Image (cartoon, rainbow, N blue to C red; front, side, top):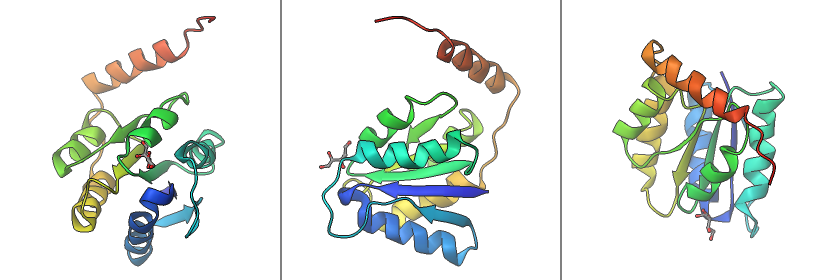
Length: 150
Ligand code: RB5
C-alpha cells in the first residue's frame, strides 16, 4: 500500500511524526508538503495528495491540519474518496470496517502525538468488512454520479 501524506503548517510537526512512524514500519509513503516554516492553505495540499490517488499513483492518504476538518472537506470533493476525520481509535476502526476509508484526516491541534499515531496504526491495520457496507458505498457512488447544474 502506498500512502500520500500532506499537511498544512498546523499539521506539519504531526505529519513528520507520522512519516517517521510509517518509514520505521517500511510502509511506502511520500510527503506532498507543506515544508517547514511555511504558512499555507490546507486546500492546496489536500488537492496535491488526493490527486495522486485519483491518477492511481497512491492508494490512500493521511492528511493533517489543525482540526482535520478542512482537509476532509477538500478530499471529499473528489469522486471515490472517503475521507474520515478521526479523533479516536474506535472511529478509525469503524471508518475502515464500515466506510472503507481511503483518506484519514487528523487534527494536530486536537490530538497528542501518541494518540494520533495510535489512530494511524488502527486505520492501517483494519480491513473493510464489505457485505452490507459495500451496498452503502455503492449508493454513495451513485450520488457522486449525479450532476446538478448550479
Ligand atoms: C489553519 O489555521 C487551520 O484553519 C487549518 O489547519 C485547519 O484546521 C482547517 O480546517
